Image (tube, rainbow, N blue to C red; front, side):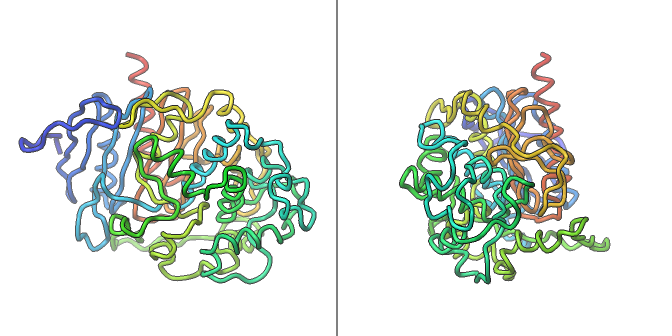
Length: 421
């Protein structure tokens, strides 16, 4: 399992402009594709181990340190049928990791003076004032305190894919708990609520805003609303390799709020459609709470650029200044309060998750978001590090996936070692 450089493969230039050794590891499955900088090979070891142990089918990991890309690797298989390898060219649906991108888009609008976190949502979106929501603030909306984790009444899958239908239904829904009294994870509705604010103050759809203001300037790929010609590059999410061990039963959350959990994560059952997130119509729609399609490098680069000047193929990029970053990372929910839908003590800032119990990233000052199945992306400014893990094999972990925990721990150790040198 030693690392080696194949004679026919030239050295590759990383996204940061630093020449790095192509990273190919002999594996029981397939080699890793990509590169690591000196001092960061432990991250690649962990990813290769995840693949060798069949915890992953296909996955990618990227780490930026001090504004430079130091890890950018992918490995395993594109699909469970093992028809082709999972490479750096693969695109991956990342579920709620998309929320961190949407939160960054809102922060860009805040920095430009288009809105503020203290504004009443109804000041920007008048129709939202219906049913006693006139005083809900942008901060409450972004931190899952608005009581809008689903809509009132029945909903179809086709309606979920229609932007105007969803924002109209949300505006006409009464809060499902007293605003600000607690928080209940807006698993899907977060995207339309936050995304519509961007649309109203900027004029562009959230998908176009993300593409033009975040992905394109950094030379990356983050799609909320996938162009049809890119569909062939999207790795389908799957349930993993067959195993000899007994399949683990996925238990409902503890407590008495299972109905709230189901309503939030299925939108009253509208998303109980087999293979919903591998469908091309889902990929093409703008469902910004959960259908972002991207890769690890693009997300790690974005988070890096929220706190430091970051080297990209298009040159140095800084997306946000320190003042805006400080505002968007202020915890809005009370510490120790159990989320009504998640049934755990998750803590939220302005659309970002901040350190709380049982979290893959828990360093002080860190912020980011995880996605259903195991993906996670975040910034750790104190370590001058950003991180992203994307994968196609879905597990039952949310924010605590063991694969992500191992990778984050390895990256953190590497960053700490670099700092001590």
